[in-house]
Length: 196
Image 1 (cartoon, one colour):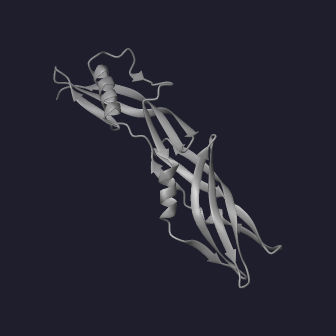
Image 2 (cartoon, helix red, strand yellow; image 1 turned 45 degrees about the vertical axis):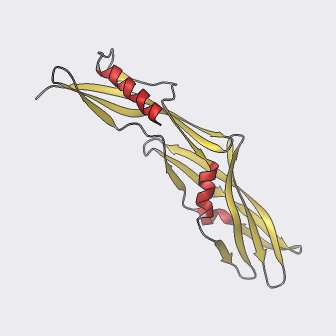
């Protein structure tokens, strides 16, 4: 983290003490800042959600070990569900779909369980479909990679002030094995504020 801060400050300093050819410098394909969120963090969150269970007409169910698995460029929701009635109890695996997105304007990484249905039968009797996904309606929102700040002001030797605005000009979101990686490329706009 300190290395990234040093690189950004060095870049900003070089902008301040040289006259730019244009007012805007864009990062293009360069990854200035990257953030990796490991699936273990999301799974710790799930394990602290408390019990997820419900009682239906003829049976009750409880969700066990909800977790996310990130592999081969996709995120999958996994869990076990135990369904029981007065006579029998059965456990089944649950596999669901997870969407992962990055909101550039809000700088948020959004993880949403969008589908996790399981069809349950007890002793060959189909008791129906349980929509586990609806119990995860609220998306998990995590802060994305942060720049130093939205802008930085530096005093110049002649008494003027140079203001450098910092913005995300492009980003990439990759699902790598066991993690979500978000990288941003920054753009800088500078202006000189005359001495008062």
